Amino acid sequence: MKRLFAVAGLLCVWGSGTISSQAAGFANNDFSASGVGVANAMVAGVADVTAASYNPAAIAWLDGGVYVEGDFASRSRNSSVKLPSGAIQPNTGSARNASTLHAAWMSHDSDIGVSFAFTQPFEGENVWAGNRTSIKTDRLSLDLVYALSSTLAVAHGIDVYRTTINMTQGAASFTGKDKASFGVNVGVNWKPAPLWQVGMMLRSGTKAKVKSGSQQVDLRLPEQVTLGVSYDMSDALRLEADLAYERWSRLKNLDVSGSTIRNATDLKDTLALKTGVTWYWLPDTTLRFGYAYEQGANRASAFQQAIADQSGHRLSLGAGGDVFGAHVDVAYAYTFHAKQSVTAPVAGEYRDRKQALMISLSKAF
Picture 1 (cartoon, rainbow, N blue to C red):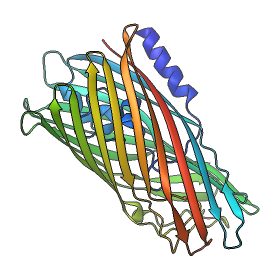
Picture 2 (picture 1 turned 30 degrees about the vertical axis):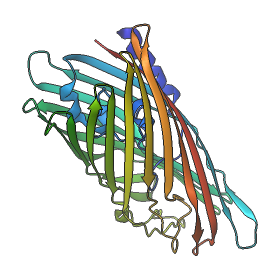
Picture 3 (picture 1 turned 180 degrees about the horizontal axis):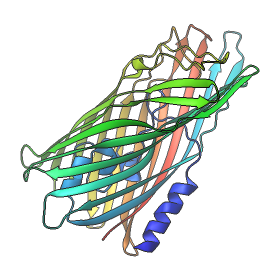
Picture 4 (picture 1 turned 45 degrees about the vertical axis):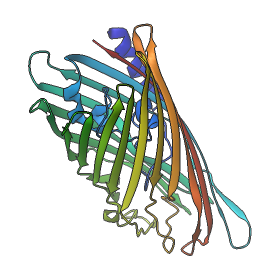
C-alpha cells in the first residue's frame, strides 16, 4: 500500500506543469484516463475512484474498502490565427503535462464514505506576439458520501482552490498567487430502474484574489453543472450521455489592478454534450470510446486572445486492465476546432487542434 501511494504521489509531482485547456474557456475536465476514454461522460455511470472528481455520490456503489489512483496526462496544442494580410500568427503558449490524485474510503458495515481529489480544473497558457497569459488553478476536493437507499446516493463537500497567474503585456508584467479560495459541491447518483443510472454534479466555482504586492487580479471561476444518464445495454456494454453547463459570463475581465495590463472579456455561458461507450470486453479488460461537442466561451465580435477557446469536436478511445495486482488505464483524445472568423479585437481566422494522452494507475484495498 505504501508503494502504491508513493507511485501515485510521484505521478502527481511529475505532471504538475502547465497544460492547455480542454473545454470552454480555460477549463480542464480531464481527471482520469477512464474519463478521457469516454469523452468525460462520467457523471452517472462512473464506476471507479475517479468519481471523487466526476461525481462523488457514485463512491457509494463501490465495495467497502480503500481506493487510490494516480493519473498523468501529456498534451499538445496547435493554435494560430490567419490575419487579413495572409500572415500566420502562432499561439506559442505551451501545452505540457498534468496530473491528478484520487482516493476514497467506503465503510464495510455502513452507508457512509469519504472521497478526496487533487486536480487542475482550470489551466491554460496563450502567448500571442509576446503577450502572455498563463493561468493555473489547483483544486482539492473533500466530500462526504451517503447511500440513502439501495438506489439513491448523495455527496456534498468543499473545494479548495489555489491559483497562479503570469501575464506579460508590452513592457508590463504580473506574477501572482492567491492564498486560497473556496467553493462547495453537491453530487447525486440515482438508479431509477434496473440498468439505468442518473447523475448530477454541481460546483459553485469561486472568486480568487491573485496578488503580487499592490497589484491584483480578481478571477471569477465559473459555476459548473453536469447532468447525465447511463444505460447498461448488457452486462458488457454501458452507454452514457452528459450535458455540462459552465457560467463563463461571470468572468468580467482579466485586468490587473495597479498595472497597465488589461484583458477585457465578453464571454458567453457554454454547454457541452458528451457521450461515451464502455465495453467490458473481458472480466479484467475494458475498452472505451467517446465523442463530445464543446462550445467555446469567446464571441466572434469580442474574441479574447488571452483565453483563445473555440467550439470543437472531441473523439477519444481508451482501454484498461489489471496488471501485477493493480489496474492500469490509458486513453487518447483528439479535439478538432472548426475555423472561426473573428472580427475584433484582433481580426482573423482562428485555428486550433489539441491532443491528449493519459495514463492512470489504481488499486483497491
